[in-house]
Length: 203
Image (cartoon, rainbow, N blue to C red):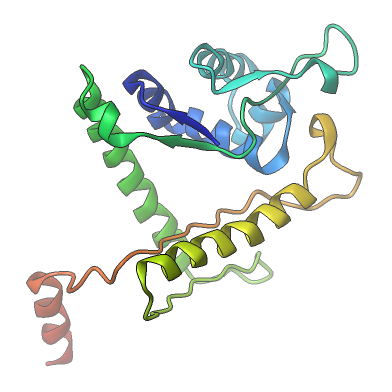
């Protein structure tokens, strides 16, 4: 997994479109700008611009071995295992705290969006989705082991459904799914305001 401490890299992936491009490349494997434009429903020149910006910060690169010919430009993640940040080192750099604040704000908004969409009723004949919450008693080492095991399962499914050069089989009806994972000590009450709301509904 590629690890960064440059605030500029964090700002680059905080952009919603670039973050989505990274997600699609992670899920599908190498893709062309035209494939990304179709998946994101954006103009091809916009997809190409964002790919070049991600390449500028060393997050994606061209994959000539995946191309059909010299004119065919295919893009892939620099590290297929993903991205991580040395947060403490990054915060100490100029602009680090501001970059992290932008990233955190966007990440929280995205998390709310995912949960809101997941809790919407499924339309008739729509794709199934799942929302689950479990509570476990774990030591710190056990929680680390659980994270690794869940990650291994997700990675097995991710790599099994990738295709070379973004070439999906005819009739493939797969969509990109979000698997949103939170493993953390129980955060405690959501707040007095939420409890007051619940009490008011019961009265």
